[in-house]
Image 1 (tube, one colour):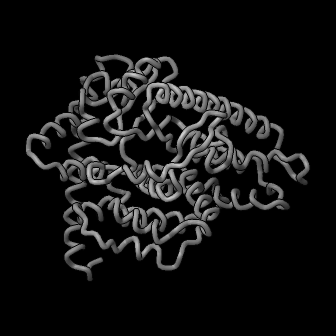
Image 2 (cartoon, rainbow, N blue to C red):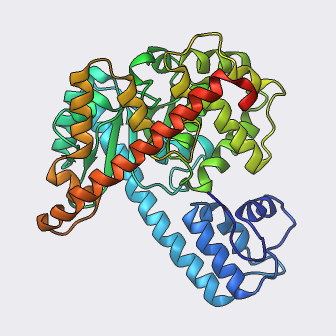
Image 3 (cartoon, rainbow, N blue to C red):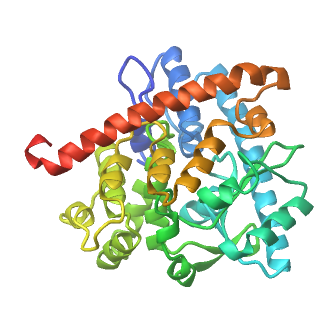
Length: 394
């Protein structure tokens, strides 16, 4: 992932740093450079944070008129989308509360409220909520009443093997994912969520009372979510971790943070994510934090797999790690069949196909692609095993 915006080596990081200063005006770049930078800022979802700085008429230099008009149009579309997401989130949380089903919105408008005090500021694509696993049937029924349809490989696949369900609204195309864990495979079944619920905080989003993640759980989740998506992540996710850590540096209980990360079995992953954020954004971290996170006092259930999950270049690493961690041969077979041959409706939505006839092409393509990723995963796993047994080779 790169936040680089043009051949002149101006980066999104540079612009964000300049925009944080009260006296620095936007630089006088050629139109094509600004055009490229706006593309990059939109792709990496940080345009809302640059907008006030770029459009401040009191500055000695502003954008050329055509680019200024384009910027305003992008922001109108972004704000309209965020307004829709916020209204939908509030409607879902209110419906869940009305049925006695607790939920904690994660990321999306709720994170925007926690970080910026404005639920409409943060670009997002879908809605994610943490719920209790035993409430999943009730959550599914409530979302169905709201007009959402379940989307999964095969019936029961996600609840058995994943960390969240998926629902989509046929009219708006909005996806809602009820999570029952803040971590990802293969750790989902090993992490107790009760302490996370106990640390939850109260907040208001668009005048609706709802829960939010406590600071420690929020940072840990943002870290593992950053690695969850591999290299293909918007710079927004690093920017938000950087901003959160800078703002909470003095109030964060770092000793408890390390203990919670270790208890969840996420120490190595959190260390990898924080190292990446610090490298990209210059985030200040306590001197020994990364070393403490990487050296867990608790033996991992998946030591070699844990090392492999930090390798962002390995596609499908979580899927294959989950397969490896399954106990019985029957479970492994069911999991593999669900991955290789999901339902036709899942295939249509996953690959945005216009007709069922296209499945004759896409099923073989999916089969070959997953086999190739599996071979790459096994190769990377073998290298990780050798590396872990031979420290001098690291």
